[in-house]
Amino acid sequence: MTSPLPRLVVLVSGRGSNLQAILDAIATRELDAEIVGVFSDKPNAAGLLRVDESLRWSATPKDFATREHFDAALADAIEASRPDWVVCAGYMKILGDAFVRRFTGKLLNIHPSLLPKYKGLRTHERALEAGDAEHGASVHFVSAELDGGAVIAQAKIPVLAGDTPQTLAARLLPREHALYVEVLKLAVAGRLTERNGIALRDGAPIFSPLSPDVTENPLH
Ligand code: NHR
Ligand code: GAR
Image (cartoon, rainbow, N blue to C red; front, side):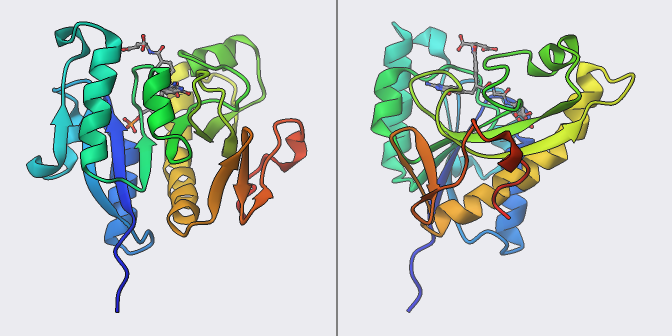
């Protein structure tokens, strides 16, 4: 007998290259899962076009009375697709507390900085302005505090002379794709949990932002 595939929902606001990396990993059977919906706050997001029309949902927050109303509609639509994991991949709207509570423990995000550095926006620019020698991306559980949830894994790249926010982002992107797929492999295998703001792999803490020496791909 075969067990049902773990069900992934992906949230996108833009081009969806991280979504594509997940689709590719599923196609090659590297990732044993199924995408059951792609959701967006931008009806024109290119990322939506990467999946069959039947899997797409989008709405415009401004068409709702409040952000909370939009979040509730989004959460209802996501819940209807019965996800095991809800994967933010370039989703650019802050999710309210009520939304986060509904999906706690199964809500992931990839953020383009070495958290806890540079929460929020313009991360590549801020790393350059600070003169950092290294930059990177973090996958974390989403909590009500923006980019403040438990970090699961990070990928690091060097900052090179002459880097611009664009060159830095372009060098980081393929590392983001590989990192997210690695984390999702653990997630769908049931090996990833969160407790008290700490991410656990096989029940043991996998990462501490206070131990920078373990940041380089702690999943391996
Ligand atoms: N929601 C919660 N509750 N917690 C997090 O950690 C979240 C989140 C929603 C999205 C992604 C995040 C990132 O990785 C993310 C993490 C949007 C903004 C933002 O300021 C900041 C961080 C992130 C996503 N958005 C503006 C807003 O008012 C709008 C920007 C726009 O539409 O272009 O929502 O970086
Ligand atoms: C990625 O670099 C991701 O880390 C970042 O946006 C890009 C999305 O690319 N996410 C955020 O900045 C979240 N606020 P994609 O749409 O091609 O996956």
